Length: 384
Image (tube, rainbow, N blue to C red; front, side):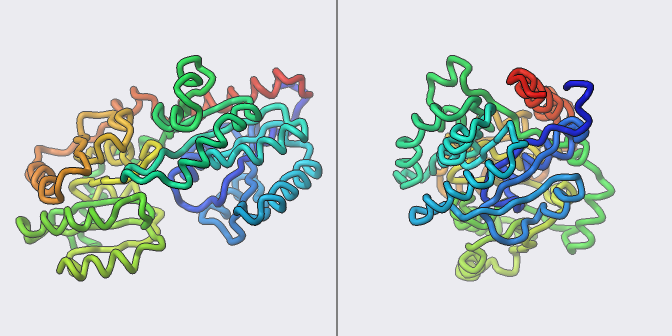
């Protein structure tokens, strides 16, 4: 950075909200660890309420702005809002959009407003349930124009990168992976925390199956309940802990009642102590229908947890340790349960920090790389 520049460069991140989701948590991990005297993050959101991370963002010097939500009937208003915003805020020379194929819209306006660095970021893949969704159709239609308006293309995994930009862009290096890195030290296995949390939640003598994620279709909670019901048939002390909130909570509660396991399912809702909660559980189950990467799976491995995840859905690169077993969603709930129960009496648990760091998921290292990317691109475009 130019020595005369006393203020940090400001990067504008565009997405729906800054609530606790995979993409949002990834952004916050980078934000917390980037040198904010060099680079500052601001956020342009279509969510009109207060986001989970809002207070923390403001405390770190970030700014939050709101614009018209993007829907089929509000595209014109959305585009006008972005154009108005960028004309009023010409300080933004780097725009980083996290809205999948819909990034074509803000990046198109950014190009028209002569923003020189326009980053598209893929956090998703298509649903793995055999459906051909509207989202997938739109993604195919918007992929080519997106490549025409972006200057840089990132993805959270190889699969998510290819899904949005295509194999050719991956092979030629025009699209690259920006890892969903984590603060590995926070997730290091801690026996004292484990015992305290198990006592606090009255789970001292239980076999605790855990899951962290929004209560939405993509996370496949209903199948998870079926898996757990099979586990509970063979292990009477089994408990299922679900961390997260979402629109499917009532449906999940009803399903648990129908399966006769409602007394064994613990719904914790939105939590800010996930690193500690992971210490409490015994096995992590992740049967998602779609995931760009599944960063919580990396967090669970760091905490030394045996993990079971959807085969051919969760990217294989998410298995950064020897703790992950992939199982096809075509296998029965009983088959999943039988495999999970095999680790019930596993050997002594150990953290896997070094393996996670070696795989490129250490936020201290990766935040420095992203910071350097922003600074280099800023200088490259002849900005004072």
